[in-house]
Every structure is written in C-alpha cells, then in structure tokens.
Image (cartoon, rainbow over all chains, first blue to last red; front, top):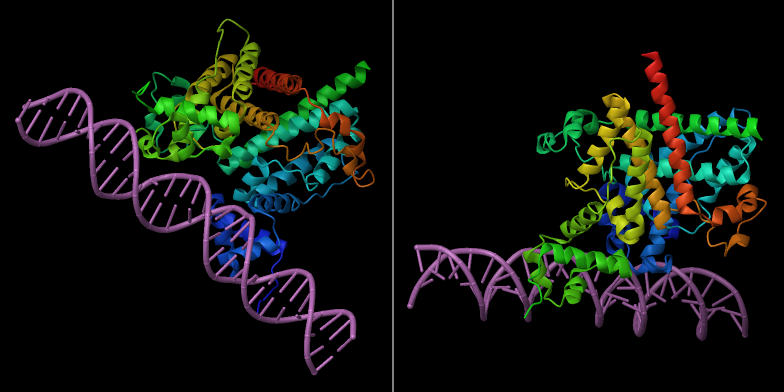
Length: 214
Length: 214
DNA sequence: AAGACGTACGTACGGTGTACGTCCCCCGGG
DNA sequence: CCCGGGGGACGTACACCGTACGTACGTCTT
C-alpha cells in the first residue's frame, strides 16, 4: 500500500529534505531510499544516477525563484528586485543552494532568470554586449555573496564567531586584528543590499556615459 | 630506497597534481598513495584525514598568490593589482581553485590577503566598517567570477559552446536566443577587468561622497 | 644492550554507487 | 475467463571508498 507511487519528483523532494536537514554529505542513495521507505535500486527506475539526481535538486531549487517583475517600474528597481528574488533561495534552502551554485547544470531551468534580466537591461538602454556584461557582473556578485552567506566560502572571513579572535597575531595582522569584531559579525541582508546598491549605481552611471556620448 | 621521506607537503603536492590532471572526483587516499608509490595507511602518519588533506590543498593553492604591493601607488591601482593577483590562481590551478572557493577553511593562510586588502582600503580613507564592507564586496565579485571561469558555476551561462544554441526556444526566450553568441563566448580576462574597473570606480565615488560630506 | 619511539605497511570493517537478475502486479488481447 | 508481457520494486553482488587497528622495522636515548 504505497501512499504514492514513487517518482523523480518525490525522490528529488526527499533529497532536498535530507540535504536541508543533515547537509549534502549525508546524501546517499541508500539513505534517500530509506527515508522514502523503499528499496535502494527502486530509485534507479526514475533517476539514471546520483549525479543526475543532484542536478534535479539544483534545478528544483532554482525553479522556486519567485519573480514578481513589474514592467512599469524603473529598471533599477526591477534589477534590484530580481537580484533579491534570487537571493531568497539561499534563505529557503540554504544548504541546497550550495548545489545550485557549485554544480554545472545544463538544463534550461536557469534560463528564465537570464531572460528576465536581459530583457530588463535591454529595456534600460544597454546594447547587447553591455547587457551580457552587466548580467555577468551581477551573477558573479550574487553567487559570491551567496557563497559567503551559506557559510561555505569564507576563504576570507576566517575570523568568525569571534571565538578564536585571540588566535590572530596582532603583530602580523594588525588590521585583521583591529577589525576582528567587524569581520566576525555580518548582517548578510544589509551587506548584500549595500553591494547591490553600489553595483546598480555603478552601472547607471555607465549607462549615462554611454548615452550622452553616443 | 625512498627518494624522499614522505611528508605532508609531498602528499599535498601529489593531491594537487592529481586534481589538476583528473579532477577533484579522482582524489582518493588510495589513488594518492599509489601515485606516490606508497602504502595507503602511510599517508595517515602525516595527515589526520582526507578532509584535512583537502584543507591543505586549499591552503597551498592560496599561499601561492603573488602579491607585489607597491605602497607608493594610488590605492585604486593597488586594489586592482591585488584582485588580479588573486585571480591568477584560477589560471595556474583551475580545478584546485574550486576547493579553495567551496571549502570552509579555518587556517590562517587566507589571512594575508585580507590584511593587505584591509590596510590598502584603510589607507585609501575608508573607515573600518566601510573597509570591511568593500572587502566583502570585492571578495564576492572575485569568487563569483572565478566560479564562472573555472566553469563550475554557470548557473546561468548555459548557452555555452554555441553548440546547442538552437535548443533554446526563441519564443520563450527571445533575449537569450538573440544574444546567444554573446552568451556563449566570453573573454574571461576582459570580462573580469570590466567588472573590476566598474567596482573600483563605484567605491571611489562612495569614498568621495563620504569624504566631502563628513 | 635494551628499551622507546616514529614510520611504513597489511588487513579488515562499514559504507558508497550501481550493474544485474528476479519477482510480482497490473493490464490488454484472446 | 485466462494468460502473456511489460514495468516497477527489490535483493544480491562487486568494486571502491575512508580509516581503525595491529604489526614490523629502523633509529635514537639511556
């Protein structure tokens, strides 16, 4: 008496659940099967292999982005909204987000956001080449920010939790040492918005210069 | 007759080699041991576990960044140089870079770049809080860019290689379809510098406003 | 000489992804 | 009605993984 007949969607959902609860390392075919109350190999009737399953997870997370694009609004507002919408997934599915970000995915799930962004930029007045450049700039910033937020990146926010602040040598790293409290704490939302505003302003002046010059 | 007596450094080097040749998935203790002509468990005399070994890899790659900081130069030039220096590692060790970027590392190897950047920003006139903000902004951008370059991210540069351009539906995604050639090709260096200049200009403006206002 | 110690090593255990063969249930054609 | 076949669920098996443990051997100290 199977409550539901097992499908790729159900498997992906279980995977997301598992990742969110116990982290990506906990994901194994056996574990997912157990969570679904199902034999391991049954999964392979709906999913060709583990890699494809993880692609599915990335795709599912990505497709949950909620765009509420208002074509009437000023393009700066629209860009801001789109960037924030994308960042939201990091809050709803923090650990799965890592998969989205660190996984090369060849599906079309990511195409919708690209289309929205490009059309916004084109309507703002950027030519094709600049629109693509700006898009890439924003993507780089957003992805980089998400990596920090999700806590995986911090190649360089190492003085965190303020727990081991005293471990950095003030002689070798005077600035790091002095700014340790600031480096340790971080209001992600505020930080993200700060950078976002800076970026939007920057590309606005870029647009102005092109406009008045050409 | 061991040519050299096996050490953490030698093991890490072998790991980097292996990653660069066959990708991170190929890394296993057995494989590394085999490459070194050594028993698997001998590795554990110099490395507590695999995770620590990968940390070592990240640290080693990170420490190869070549900073040629010129304290005489204008701060914008110094920032530019530091950002470019960091990007270089993506070229020398593309696949290992992923580890650096996707791995939470608690060592002090990443502290030197932070120190340099902070002191540059402070000398430019930013107060502590702003210096940290700017640093985070740059890190986000650089990490995001590296992810695209290394080819792992492209959450959204899916139309690549221009091979399957025709697979996107022009009706659903007119912009993507129209700009496909631009989306497919990418001069990473030019793209990176473009964003970098924009960022530097933006924070220069920010600095001006703060300076004239306060 | 004798003991202590560090390094290299082999074996073994529990876990992983998945190829393959088997069973059963359901469904369409006679 | 039967009955044959196809698809999904499943168990077993294999190769590989990280690593805990016990052991053998060289070197250094006393």
